[in-house]
Image (cartoon, rainbow, N blue to C red; front, side, top):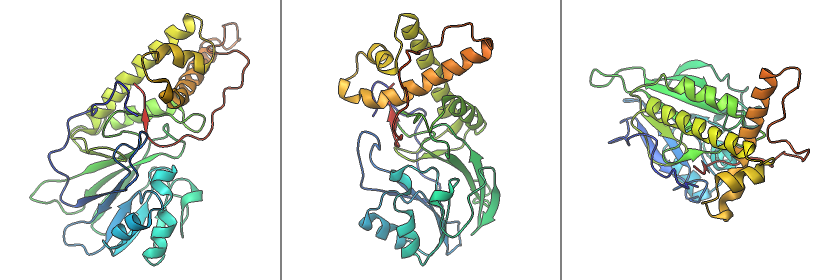
Length: 301
């Protein structure tokens, strides 16, 4: 769901790293862009590869992935169905390979992934990056062949839905948290010049540039939400009606997830600034403000 922010957050890569193959799932839509990006990693000279995000439980797509075997294990960036639904079936197709995820619900044959873990396998070095925000269990992966090619390292950051190839991502409140998301984007600004290979959309040439773009976008959106509240909006739907007035109403349901996350963030900031509780609660009207489970994909601008 691109809204006004429909362009990539950074320049596109000219080509993928030579050790990376994209297998895109056939699940295009407003929340998934062209479909979920399943990434196959295979270091030069290595027979065994690694899969990141098998995607939906689409038999044809999973068979395409399995045909790229042997596969040593599967990594999950977060637990939304369009990334993880096919993981157990793919594990079966591959003879029971392990599935690593931060949430134990999505693991197969192993303990949960430590979201700060580093390990080497099949000629690749993996650094898990703890990047909650889009969801509580969101993880990015910094991956690099252990043997430099052509005398140069070829590292890449696999960003899941923390950074997308086009547009911006939903903070899926209440599972997602805007404060954590802003911290995660700050973390990703450290990876200047490294490609960002996202869960949806095209690959980006510079992870840090994309993270800085996302940070600027989120801060601008927070200012708009503050202004809407100051003008009298007291609930997430009322804020959406002000901030997204020029967007098709059929898309407001997705905007409301992120607006709920923004209101929650502003309320917590206000409580921190006014521990005695003397200030007026931001966006509060006594109404229930929980949302249903978030899904993967794009935010409105």
